[in-house]
Image (cartoon, rainbow, N blue to C red):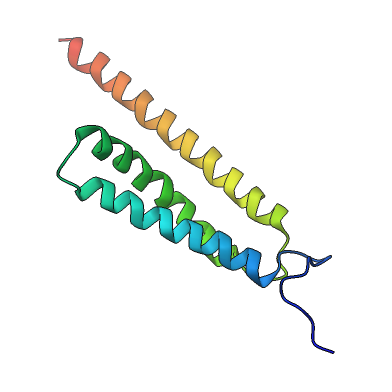
Length: 106
């Protein structure tokens, strides 16, 4: 009897679930690029530019989309990426504020 890849696994994601997450990440990445390069709306460009950054970070999760890997490890890696993004964003904003203080000191 063959094991069915679509049945839930006690150890992690099924092959279908892993492929669905992977294809969703890749599909949203392509959509974000389409939104950036469309010539019709500045609002769509803005949404696309934000999505490019988000999906660039989310693309780091694609190697974790493997059958048998627990979904919790994928969520944990996603949370780590979000925390790093927040820290880097705060550091960039903080350095911009400090630079503006430095420039206005003259």
